Amino acid sequence: MKKLYDIEEISKLIESGEKLLLAGDRKLLTKLPKGNWVAGTIPYFVAVSGGMFNNKQIYADVLPDYIENIEIKVYDIESIKNIHKDAPEHGFSVIIIPSNSKMHSEFSLQSVNYEKFGYKPLIGWLSGIELNNSNNEKPAVISGNDCIIREEGAIVMHVVLPKDKYADVGIINIFEQGNGEILTFAEDGFSVKDVIINGKKQNFADYINSAKYDLKLPLVADYHGAMINTSYRAIDEKNKLIHFYAPVFKGIEYKQAKPIENYSEDFLRQLLELEKTSRIIFSFNCILNYLYGNLEGKKFGNVFFPCTFGEIAYQLLNQTLVYLKIEDL
Amino acid sequence: MVIPAPNHRIWREIVEGKRPGEFTGLGTKLFISRLVNKVRQNPDETVIQSAIIDLHNYFVEKKQISSIINELENILR
Image (tube, rainbow over the protein chains, first blue to last red):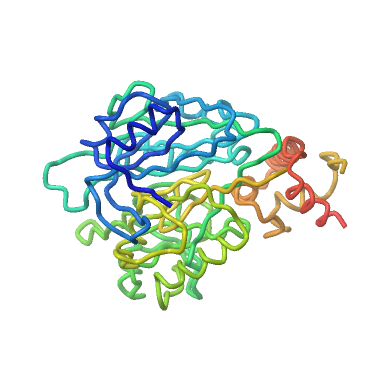
């Protein structure tokens, strides 16, 4: 199954009216004609030949022909709270947000409070850049409606399905909660100073150092049976702060993840299991899985994905593969 | 299946976190978790009632999705 295309090939797909989810280098995406597509910047993918860095081609998911209608919308900080109200009664929505943008913060912290959160399938990702970025490029998103590069805001494709089908968003998370202490935090946020353990507040950086946490392993919270990760971004030893790639939330109980024996094999095993029972239409995987799991050159059956700076399955996730499948009603 | 009325005990049990892991859909799990967390942080009766109404509305809107409704039916048995 082809996933990486040259500009000319993508342009032909666009001009033929195909509905597309695109990912690639900014310089390529800005050359595309208007059409039924949304895009984000990222140069890391797992395609037919395996995991790779590629800034010469565009990754494309072509949506199925049976899709009845799409609507592409641009949201700002004020309007994003309406995303679920705007979503079709019968369908799904795909959102792309530039990482490190104000929208990234807003969505990460507030999406669980938006009206109708969890009602309608929402899947998406945070756009990114080349990791050794020396030209100060910022992550961006583009709507095929106007082809404007945006470093703020969010692009959403709302997709209407026929009445005999429904969409389901799922995740593959290879991490489980470990056997250590339950950790809670006093406030929501991307950065914390203190953690609460057994009712006592203590500095989290000191605790991490004394407990010798492996920071490639995320914090894991149990959301009614769904294991949801929060990945470490950095320790600020001078100010004794811990920074994360997604926010921690007050009241949620976290545990450090159990160590993983073989990162890429665990992913492959779960992906192959999923493929046996589900038709995955598209998926997105975390860049941290690409890096920590050494996915470069590795293949994952017939599942392909961009490796993103964050992934969204109703809310922002870390170190997770998110996927959408479409089933018959 | 007729969705139980908001005063059925099952809704309170769910929002109070007494029925963990009963649903398999990710959206349903995350939705319920949000309500459980709200109630856990503030177990005031008005907060519980508001969570129950939200939860009941969620299942009424989802009544076309047989997998979700089947799971609710299983819990009620």
